[in-house]
Length: 101
Image (cartoon, rainbow, N blue to C red):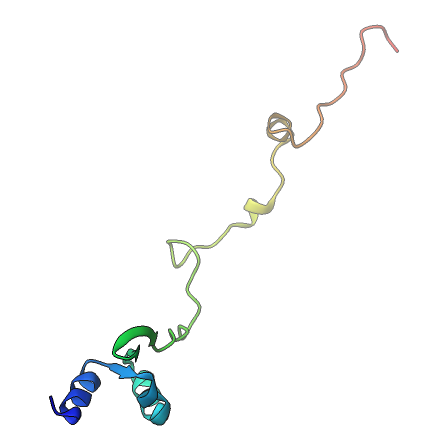
């Protein structure tokens, strides 16, 4: 096979031998920036990939399923004492002793 044809096949398949990648790194990085993934080969055996990084979203993604979700102020209020005691959040109140102390 003609070496130029072999090179064209590798170029088409996004596989590049390391020596060629060194010689033309800027060209391959431009292709990666355009969205391609380049497979680096050592003696025609794939050893690594160069792929574009995921871009950050333009705006922050809302938390939760409901995109319009709001938390009411009552959410931050303390629970009633009996519920806190049941959950172990407060010590039980001391009962008055029967002996009149």
